[in-house]
Image (cartoon, rainbow over all chains, first blue to last red; front, side, top):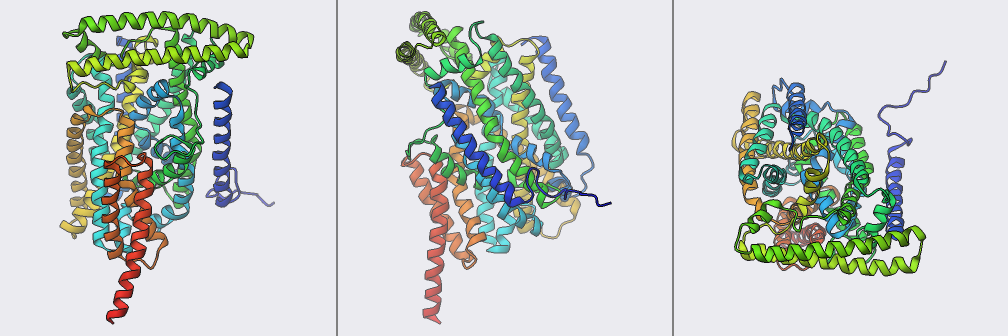
Length: 43
Length: 566
């Protein structure tokens, strides 16, 4: 039986380091947008 | 502080220091002492780099900044995730592949000994000075609580850190930092819940932020492009990127942390997770400051948060003037209460027009409070020209000791200690690594035994510990500590980063060109900083760009000269 083992050296939530870097950039954009909405909402 | 608080504080410190010392016993060479035999998993690397960056200053100054000026400081960290990505692609694989102890070792392989020595020297100056400030920050706490001189508390705190860092080296640093960060997260979470709990019954979490927002404390984002404002999206993304890249890529206190990772990918993952977590963490710390601000709208704050300086003024010839100002402050507080009630009603009704009117009224009341505080600090300055008239670092501390329940006070004071100990320990370890690997082992005693280098590392840690404690004793006259550390870094980091970027990306540039470029760039950065031409974050960009441009130009002219003469 074939066992689908994940490479322990791969990053979590992504299948390659390149994708993980991209994820981090999206995360930064999301945070900036959320902080902007926070600023506008409570102003 | 109650006996319970002292017990919690003492137990937390003893537990963490004992754990670090126990886990780090048995280092037999500098591989173990300075690199921890490169055996750490990613989560240890992540917590270690976070603990190194998040000094006590972070937990003292950041809530104080949010209280005084709002949440704009969070933008300072926007460049961090981008810097982590560049680090993981370029710096980390190279450092791991070359098996270096320090970042500067690589520069000799790439350029020459001069460049290695120059960057190591710049690092030793910058880190030596800033570590002094890192030790000084928590000593404020003890001096305020015990009403004793900061000299005594500085010596006490510095002594504990020096002792366990000298004994256990980098492993003691990493293991203590893991526990420290766990306790710090728990303590801050508890503090946040307690602030909301202590607000009046009709003021919930969202309304508390709303009230602070109406008084200008929730502005976390500023898209204006202003070279003189350090806290905008652009200065955070561009200036912050350069500062964080140079800090994590070229400052041995951070390089030494992720070099302990068991592989390139473990180091990478630790750094990237730091990029994920750091900004939300900083936002939450600032949010605690905002909640404390709202708390003090309903509970009368002291007219000045540094009780030591305030007591000094009360016992001086200026007491009558101070009493007048305190009466004025009481009246302003009472008047503000009435306006807050009106704002509260308007928020409940959703009456937009009244909310706008109350916003203006409360902003004016806030300005009045600030004016009274300025008058108090003017009096302090008249009474003692050397008085510390910036109380930002005391705001959160004053709230903790005056309003939180027994036990939690001890835990939060322990957090300040732990944060300071974590970053100081990393700094001492990195100062020792650079002194031993880049200077002693390279220039003074090339062929000594492993035992000799281990012993030199221990002595070096001890000597740097003593120097940093001495620096800490002079740090009391500097205003906002967090800014002081960042300003100092900005003078030097840009130049060092420029040298590393030339090393990585400009393969045709040689050692002589980059060495002269670094000296010229550093001189120009110092001139820009001295004449206050731009906000300090931009000094990183200027230093870095100047090194790269001057080095490329010099290399071009040197090559032309060589061609002509040949």
